[in-house]
Image (cartoon, rainbow, N blue to C red; front, side):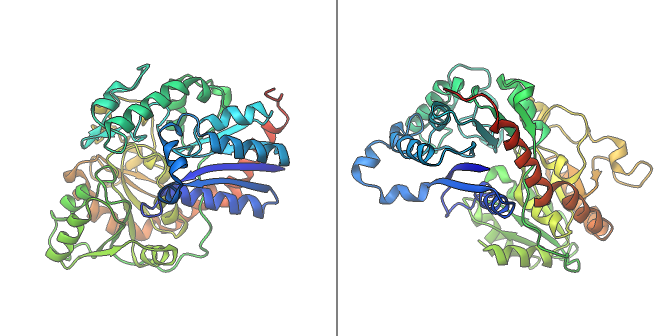
Length: 429
């Protein structure tokens, strides 16, 4: 089987879980005997582009003529079975779907965010969940609020791109929804059930988990939607040293908040940006990993990395986080409900998720591999000591959830089955 994997890498200065997943997926497919032809562009290429190439950048999200030329040549030469698309922006463009179909190659896309509808891709603006562009022919609110790269002009271009390519997205042969919530998002966008498959991501197996460490680890981009300010607010509600150490890894616009907290309290340590080895060391040094997202975070890679190392996770009950820790229950689908519903998730946790007759405090949902709470400082503060005390009891089940659901052997087999189901479909000619 021969697969083209197409992806526009995010800038290396802004670490991306999506980049990590694409790299891992290519390695896992190759190890499984699949011939992978990477069709990769990187946003880091932009500064070194020629003046002529830069002149075409404003239209590249819509068309990207050089990428279509290069892809057409690749498809003609190698005649792959399937093209698997991840992020097309800004150097590939959704037009790669049309180019593949013109060559009779079916297309799979993994949906990592909400950019079929939302120009920023995250349904989050000015500190709250926002879905103002949902259902509109043109995302005028995104232009008004400068949602894409804080630029009215670039937001207008992205909103136009989404409008132009609505038909393109609806022609994709198979969508990979990372969770059932993303499947709901795609159905709401008009994608029929038979073209949606739920398949999570995986990360490489780090091997037998190290003995449980102490304290907590927050590892994410230091930006408002990731919730580092929410976490610091919750942490300050406890006496210094009472919860062990809070380690924070990452970089971003809210770095100054973390540095101030580390200067203020000896139980807060800022680790900066970590490489792969540093990430593993930080996970092993901790007992619990925190995912304090303030948006409908689709499938945070850091959670899968934590489970692989036998570390339970304390997260907010948004997006894919409840699914990841096994604490999901029937509720308004993440990424599809109105902002007021999504922000009021303290009480929807079913009593059975709190261990039935256990002494789990109200408002804390217990899953196979961690806990979920509302994205509010008081709720997170109440859950911190519960998670610290309960971590030893969830280490084995956290690792078991990884092996059962997110291990590369499980996920890669599922992905190959998806490809095989498309490889024999009628060609788009």
